[in-house]
Every structure is written in C-alpha cells, then in structure tokens.
Length: 203
Image (cartoon, rainbow, N blue to C red; front, side, top):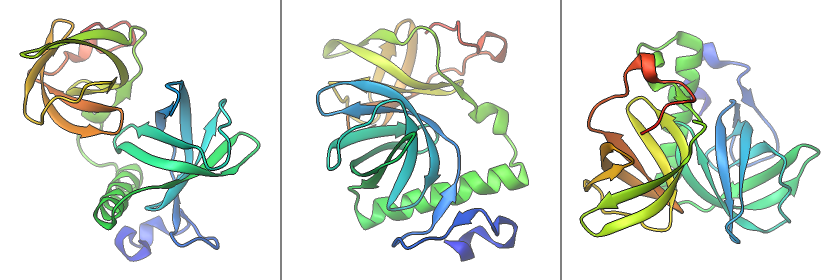
C-alpha cells in the first residue's frame, strides 16, 4: 500500500500490529444490522481488511453487518472490537474485493492530497427525504437513500435489480450500476443540476 500511495502520503498510513496498513480517511456511511436496524457512521481509518468507525450504535462482538461508504460502496463484515466512540470491523471479502478497496483508498488519498480534477462532481449528500418508491418492469419496491450525488444514488433495498436495468426512483430515471449486500447503486440518465443539489432535493 505504501508504495502505491507514494511519498506524498507518508504519515497518512497508520501502522500497527495488523495484517493490513490502515489509511486515516473520513468517510460518511450507513450501517445495516442483521435485524434490519440502520444507523449513521463515519470512518476513522480504513484498510483492505477492515476499518474503525465512529457510531452511536454499539453492536456486539462477532455481530455481522453491512456498511455502505460514500465513494467505496457496500462492505460486509463482522465486529471485532469495541471502542469508546464506536467499533472496529473486519471485512468478509475476496482477495479481488480487497485489492479493489486498496485501489479506492489510493484514489481517495491522492484526491485529498493532490486535488484531483472533478472533485465537485463527486460530492455527495444525505437528503432530508430518503424514502422512495422504485419502479421497473417487474413492479414497484420501497427503497431508502444511503448516499446521493449529482450523477447517481446508493439505495438500501430488499430487491436487487439486474445490472444495466433501467428503473425510476421517484420521477428520476436511472440505470443499475452494481449491487452490494442490502442494496444497489444507480447512475442517473441526467445529472442533477448543481443549483438544485442540496439537502432539500427530491428525485
């Protein structure tokens, strides 16, 4: 990981007695417990094998959960330790998925330190209205927004439409990009105008 990030990232890695080096990065997200309970969270540090989180919810050790992080996506894992402000979890992921997480962390830190172009278009928000109805050829389903950007949205849902399928959330049309445990992500047919992109936005 250190070689990938380069000299400008020295000090960003939190080295410890873990298998994977951790990157100090703050990402907002949502957690989903096995009983369906949802909660807000924020990362303290993340690695390809796990992460430490701030959250008001304190799951029990060994409890399985799904976490969706902005710009990274859905991650499945289990609680491995409790902290004063949250908990640590390890990922249940294939080697390919772990490599993908490492690449995404590299990109995030590069963007933070180097100011990558297009950052404004990648900003995301948590709108005030999060509950919507999703319609497709197979019918309608209730969904909940986890994360919204001008170009797309991540949704909690009991259904997972096929990748590439065109669906409508509210009055906004989009194409299914990918699925993750507990939901999926859409890419909008048209980006939300920047002047309308605020917490009061409706789809």
